[in-house]
Amino acid sequence: MSSDRRADPPAAALEALAALEGVPSAYAAARDGIDVMLRDRGLRRTSPETTAESLLRGAHASGVLEGSASTLAEVRAGEGDAIATDAVRVSAMLLSVVPTLRQAPLQALARVHAVAAGASLPEDRLGRPRDAESAQRLRGVADLLTARTSAPALLVAAVVHAELATSTPFASHNGIVARAAERLVLVARGVDEKSLVVPEAGHLALRAAYESNLRGYADGGRAGVHAWVLYAAEAYAAGAEASPLRRAAE
Image (tube, rainbow, N blue to C red; front, side, top):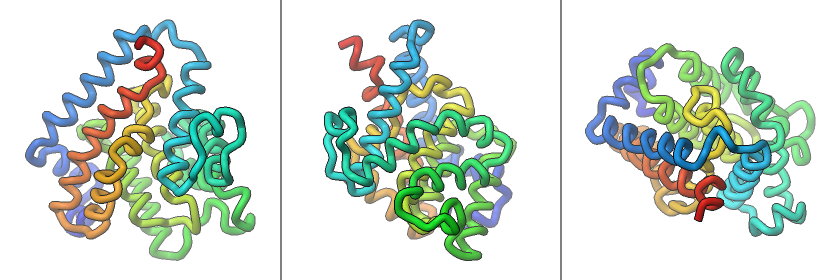
């Protein structure tokens, strides 16, 4: 968040963002779209295989955003490059971390990073912040995740994503961790309990805007944060369109 918002208590900072111009309507529309998609496409009839497909699509998209050159078909066949393989490894364990995210978010984030970077970093760097400043930023993310707030869960997910992606608290794989954390928030807060929306694919579909708005967020200005929050609502709508529920019905 912008420097002035970081000085506020986490709940107040989130609620201030939720009240910015255009944000309430954007997030109401995004949540309505997700709810309608889940209801109309037969949420009660979904299988574990549908969730697995959503996670696989998310892993592919997150890997591409991290620099992977693998296609979805290659990832599905287990033939993805190293970055894609890292993202798939995260997707395979991700939902098991949901209870930890609720109770001990720092532990959950450390676990996600350890799995993502397990094939490329020495053990003593897995799940550990790069330095004291990074540790402080991670504590700030944990505070956002545990704050009692009336801000929409989608907005909390968007801010957590941006904070992790722009502060790069770990030695590697920060984008993969950030996008995994975003999905975790959507599950943990009841937006998408079966993890059928593919937010990572939403970001990939809007890649130029995704990367531009993350740069704006990183600059720390209020306008950049506002732009990111508005962008994220659009990305969630695109993530709903990428759901295997939606595609299966076409």
